[in-house]
Image 1 (tube, rainbow, N blue to C red):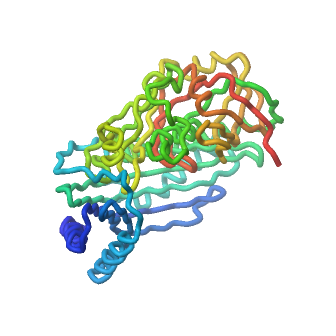
Image 2 (cartoon, rainbow, N blue to C red):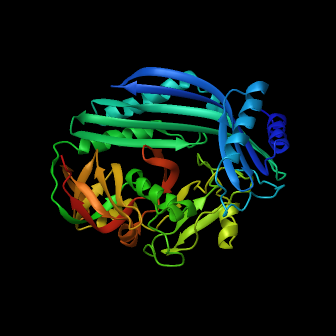
Image 3 (cartoon, one colour):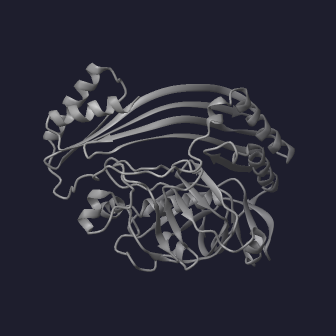
Length: 443
């Protein structure tokens, strides 16, 4: 993969009549180790390179992905995309892509060459995580370790030429003492310096041990302390809802609320495309615009939606450097840290719940923000600031705006979270939300 290939693709698309052309290429190596019941079950590696091609023709938009990079296939793919695009209906609101060239500042912690050289050390990391969980009382543990290195290239018809290298490592472990007592933790980073699978396994084992002998939880309103892992699920949704695409499509509870109060004053939520050591950070967006830090919610007030060049022109604002090839997308969701220690935060709860994981978060009404989600793994009753009983069989049924507005405390210590239903990296703390509606899950 190189600039020369992408430059030829852009030139050929222009020769066939394209107005705007964006060619982005990716070359990556990826390794994965899955472990089941304390033992490594599978290991695999892969190498891939592909090109994504976006074109516009008379405000008609087309997008394709090319994995066979032979000269003949590239030529055929460009020609097919042009024919397809000419048959599309024009998008009168399309405002073009960003005009380059641009200068880019180095991105801290984006690439660590040691990741590509883990080899046998990767299996050692798995063993350390599993043994740490077992040392805390877990009986078995399962999960996955993945790591990758890659390089991205970007060439556009608007004088943009950019590239960057990246790396990432991710460890997910679910520890069990028995069928009803489990704990799930993750750790992830772009560098080996911040990667701590042993500590992650230890914390998963601690949750599983404490979760023994759960009793059925009662329904009602509860003050809830959310661990970073489950709260990342909710912040992922909040940041996705800040995309102007989600607003226009009717999939956002933030629609029509610009410069209005949408959360408590404890909430400052940032989309930071340049956050050090974050897995989705990048020097540039899909149009080549240098990424930056966007304060989406500032002390409870919604300050901006996420835009690309085209949507920014439509609304008379500047791009927030969040371009995907078709619609704006967030990079990383960062909740500003609070002033509480975790102990102090728990002491704020006379009677409530501690939630360590969520799954199956589903919306009943996207525009209003009504949703439900199911706590899993360790669920605990808090009484006078202390964890007492282990609980089971509850559901959270509430509203995203009400949840954000009822946040009263945020801890200082933060974690980077990525996982199932957390599709973008989220940097978050332990968070206290007052008066959450707890119901009974259906069969």
